Amino acid sequence: MEGALLHPDRLLPADPATRQLARGLYQSVEALPIVSPHGHTDPKWWGENPAFTDPAALFVTPDHYVTRMLTSQGVSFEALGIGENCERDSRRIWQTFADHYYLFAGTPSRIWVDDALARLFGFSKRLGPDTANEIYDAIAELLPKPETSPRALYDRFGIEMIATTDSALDDLSYHAMARDSDWNGRVVPTYRPDSVIDPDVRDFAENLERLAEVSGCDTNTYDGYLDAHRARRAAFKAMGATATDHGHPTPQTTDLPYAEACALYERVRSGNPNAGDAELFRAQMLTEMARMSLDDGLVMQLHSGSLRGHSAKVQRDYGPDRGFDIPVPVSFTEALRPLLNAVGMDPRLTLILFTLDETTYARELAPLAGVWPCLRLGPPWWFHDSYEGMRRFREMAMETAGIYNTVGFNDDTRALCSIPARHDVARRVDSGWLAEMVVTHRIDECEAYDIARLLAHDLAMKAYRL
Image (cartoon, rainbow, N blue to C red; front, side, top):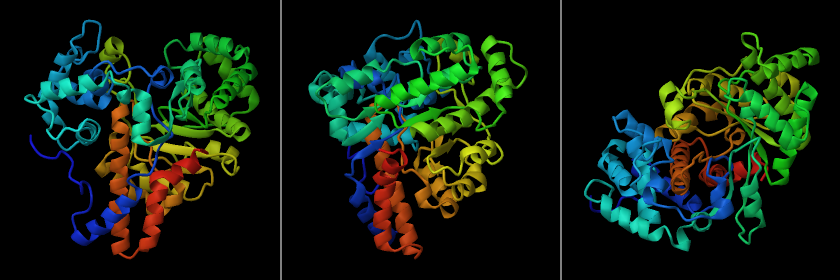
């Protein structure tokens, strides 16, 4: 397909007067630095700065947004370079992607890939069966060059800081390598303790033993277990971390008396839990993590509402993060009440809420964030990281929560080349939304310009204490 891939007014309102104002708002934030306080890029990229091996490894294999669409249409994981007996020829993987690229019409992935191909690699032709080899060759020629290394792309994209999401058991060696190098990029870890908090994860008992080893604390007792978390949080903070992240199935919290909490821990540690103990322990630990945040200042992030590994076969044969994590309904109001009643009025706590259940935006999340001083609303996440998803979030939550009780935009991605595209989409959507508020006389034009900057940059910096 010939011609420019990216229309300059993409995603802006259709009404001419509103579009003109939205264009001005967008231009005022277009070049602001990218703040990426929650993401999943590989720390090895920043520590070792290796060249990307091939176009398929950059765009296809690691991106579950891409793989889930292709598998939904019958493309095998093996054809995408995933699995024990997978295709090893990168060009063939790329051709499969190109042959099916039409499937992404109207999706965020189409916008992100088009953006990367146009702005990063300079293509004016859309990816497809007839352009696959040409685009592959051009990208493959550039990848070994220093200007397409991870650190060079960080600088080229205008990233001010980026956070990775790291297991509580991680030694953070790649972060140490990045810190000790002569590169000036700011890459920080995020403390993700799910593997040692969730009794339902595989190898939970072994993970507790490993936690004892890396922390130097005795995890055979509840007090020792909590001390191990404190020690690991301190190690993460020493490496620059400003936040924790909790990917619990639900936002359930509780605040048990000390003796009951000790007994609960002994049951889950020893592998003899009662029915419901796994959920109860996760709930107790969210409150304990909040209490630790009062002491060490780490911002909490809670992601709830995903049923992980919906396909047991895919989980078994191909591992996690293959696109089979599906949204489920969750409720926040009663679930968060024990934690909020315990520590929610303390000014030292910031708890950022994310959800895949949009039905809670107006009913629960906006009213909660609009009154509890510790709560902030994270941006639309995962399946809702899209034009329509961002619009729904603004329309359903902002009137009640208020703009200042949100945290701007997080790109939440493993795919490095999609980062500037995702931030660009958010800035365009927010510019259109603000322009509509101006033309309907809900805010002044000067306010709109101030808020545009807040949403694009400043709110994230403040919320994550950067």
